[in-house]
Length: 401
Image (cartoon, rainbow, N blue to C red; front, top):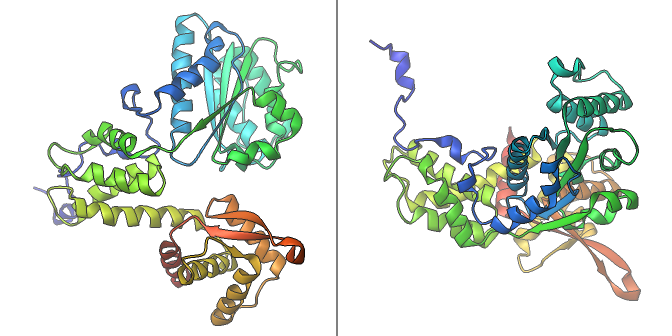
């Protein structure tokens, strides 16, 4: 007989059959990758020499968030390792999230640690405590000892502090660092202009092949969600739910991650409401929650003044919806007023400009240079990429906690 405390928990989930299918980090099976057949074929062609133990091309993949870049890069890498093994070639791949491992030392440690089998190499890769050059030396030994070919995926490569690791990896062979192993680097970026700020030497060796992943359209998003619909129990999803979620996501961003988030949240809202089915009305609530959660994650850990600057831009966007962007000086005027209301000293205009750059780096806002003619010269305008209502709501919540 169960105790009363067990009544807190539901043993039988009436909505979800396999919720893991709706997690962002879940790598779907081959048949579940939808709408990227051409891109997968192009990537496969670029790395194809690796299955014969030859050097794969270095790749740079661009595209907005949620367009399947990381998914396809991991998928191709897994397939390559499998096929290479069938050809008698020892291959492997390493994945680095450069938003998390943004320094050269962190990134090379992550690569070496993930590829090292200490039982084979007798090499230790500690989490910290070694110089960058020592991590590199151990990485080269790991690669030469264990593998003939390795692919290294650098996700959000634009978040790296500098290009040094790109230089080391892309030129390891010709620099004589490796004798047996061939390396292919796959750089992934949300920023189309990332290559423009890359060191010329790195650009020549890293950008052998470039691919752009376009946003998904409503039909593709619908197919993506349909391919994961067995995350739910039979007959739980109303027929209108997936088309509505796809239409919302396609209209706003073409982002498959957000679309899957919306579907998962709609199921959770049905759960919390005690509903036996996931209805279309839950999709609208889920979309708002997905936007709010994403933005909350982006500004987590930000300073009060960083939030005041964003709040100033949100106020301008709400009061002047017909305007596409706002000059730094206009944002600064509203920021000063917010600081007065909060009883806080203002930062300098230069520091506010730096904070705006940080928000642009996180893709919260977009910056564009404008020409004011001979009288004014050029200036920068800033535009929110997030819904200003969502921004204001989350900032108010954050400042109250």
